[in-house]
Image 1 (cartoon, one colour):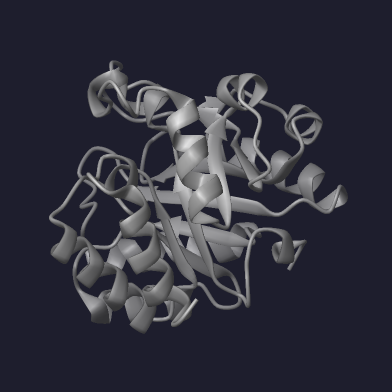
Image 2: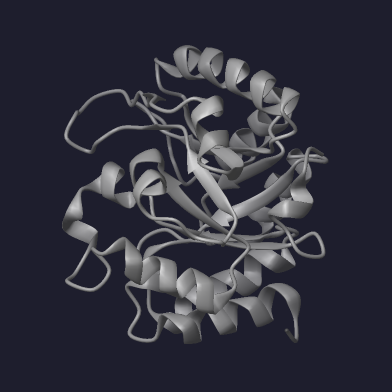
Length: 245
């Protein structure tokens, strides 16, 4: 695996995700968390494994927390088959001192071949420069069941087949499906998306289940920075991921 030691600790990880502003608009934010400085403070004090930004925020807000730059994106305003195109180059990410790059592919979209081709070029360049590549692999498109265990495993396998170092997938709430997805990913590591805001108890239970299923950690946004006590959530997640910290 390429350079995973910079974005993992003892082979595990907790990433703080803050790329939702492009993907969802400001609907996810309040007066506090709309400010990237608030997120930077959580990341620094919580000592997370990595911080996920789009390039614009990464350019304007600096942090000593390992940076993961998301290289593609789209808004929620365009309807139909999803297509997320490259917005930032590997070279730009390196200038921003990124320790890894990320890219989303919507498998099952009729545009998946465009995203496959972009990812292939990104992966080749990033690995040439010893930079890990994280693939957001989400089943999505007309007639695609996003929550089926079959498609969850398919998404994980796509990451292995395309050469990703880490795959970020969703959890459908079924631990046996997650176990099969992790096996399907082979030697490629799996992290699980935090997803929409849930009750603290429900979210932490999900975290326990995905770790038991063999994931190396989570990439969490709203369930941390929308929480009343985000550092408390971080602390509890770290105990689930690493045991006693």
